[in-house]
Each structure stands twice: as C-alpha cells, then as structure tokens.
Length: 274
Image (cartoon, rainbow, N blue to C red; front, side):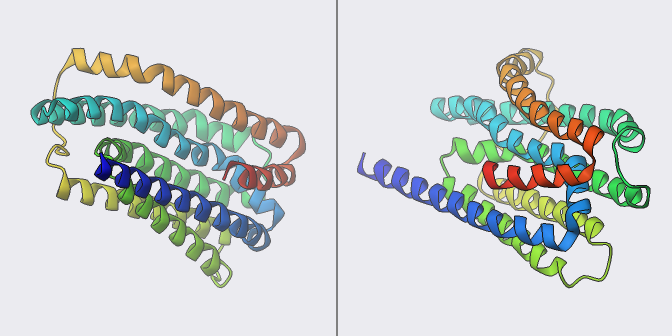
C-alpha cells in the first residue's frame, strides 16, 4: 500500500510538472510564432493545420479507451490475450488512419484549394502545411496504442518524460525558426511533423523493449474487434464532435473574414487550451 502511494504521488507530481511546463512554453511560443510568421501566415497555419493539431488531443482521449482493455488483461495476468488485444487495437487505429487519409487527400484537398480564403501567393505553402499536418496526425494516431499500454502499466514517468521532450523540441523549433532563411511557414510545418515522428519512435522503441505484448501481428478476431469498436465508438464520437465544433468555427471565420481573424482566434485558442 505504501509503495502504491509513492508511485501515485510520483506520477501525480510528474504530470503536474508536465502540464505546467507545457503551459509555460505555449505562452512563450505563441507570441514568438506570431511574430516570426506574421499574422497572415499564422492565420493560415491555424485554419489549415488546426483541425489536425486538435486531433492530437483525440489521441490522448482515445488512449483511455484502449487502456481499459489492456488493464483488464493485465489484471487477469493474461499476457497471451493482451498480445491479441494490442494487435487488434493497433489494427483498428490503422484502419481509422487509412479512412482519414483517404478523406483528407480527396475532399480535404478540394476544400483547401477551392473554398478556404487563402492568398494565391500562399496557396503552395498552405498545401505544404496541409500535408505536414496529415503526417503529424497519422503518426499521433498510430502511436495511441503504445501510449495506452504505458498508461495501463501505470508508467506515467515515461509518458511525462516523452511529453517534456516533445515540448522541448517544439521550443527549439520556435527559437530556430527565427534564423532560418527559407519559407518559415513551410519549415514550421515540416519540423513539427519531424517532432511527431521522433515522438512516435520513442514510444514504439520503449514499448518494444519493455513490454513483450507490443508485437503487432495481423489477427482476425471479429468479436474482439466489434467489442472494442463499440466501446471506443461513443468516446470517439464525442471527441470528434468537440473538435469539429471548434474547427468548424475557425473555417467559418476564414470563409467570411480571412486568415487574419484566424490568427486572432488561433492565438486565443493556444492560450486557453494549453
């Protein structure tokens, strides 16, 4: 009991430290990114990549659904079934990623290039940002099962440390952005996707090294597949509704007022959400 209390206290302190650090860095980077990109490009980034940035929060929310099944198998000490559960869960997220990729590379690209109010001389940069944001989102999505298995093992130390590394890298990008001679909007998007790749690599490396159940195999278990989908579905639906509500406002503001207003709302959103 005493050992559990120590672990709980340690995890709580690390998560509080993580959240405080994220808030402090966000307050600083929001001002610097606005100054470096300018109001126009900052607004373009928020309306084009904003929906995928908000999907990053979805990964954490969906991890709790996956973690429920992982924790159940861990509680029963059934590692064989845990391997099956992990593989089926990964297949579900991979399927979601493929569906999203198909949708955004068709309807999403059409909407970006024909409906959003973006200056013609920044349309190429907007398309670069769009593709970089897609990569970041897909990497975040397929990392979710690995995050969930870490949470199921109550190893919040790793979760907090990886988040701190991610925040430090993003801070480094903002500092570096001021000195790069290239198109800063494009570079900003590419470097953020690189951070997502590093984040994914760390999670996968750690899980493969420490948890034997993290071996992805193709497993056809229709009953488990439907059960996880049914359980996660409402959680997914609720989070998607919240995301589209917020980003829908951003799109409407762009259609009627342009990218400058998106910059103002994006700055406000960063300060509140973080």
